Image (cartoon, rainbow, N blue to C red; front, side):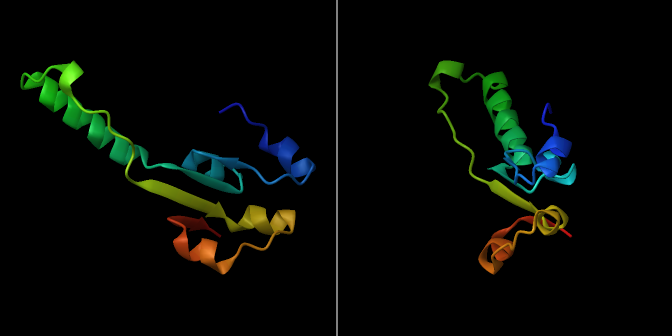
Length: 95
């Protein structure tokens, strides 16, 4: 990932991404599709193609599962208060 979190921290900018790894590296929050679920969808496509289905006949599927990850250490460093409703809905909270 080509984001300089140090620069964002220097200017006290909250950062949001679609990747969970971004938050574990020091970003404030991520919201995006659950990659494990996307891999299962891809595997089901491969299975159907190998069983003889034509790729053009397969439906386009959108992600069903999403993840919200919050980093409370970063929020505290930025002087932000995270609403309780967001904490309750988060998939993972890094303290």
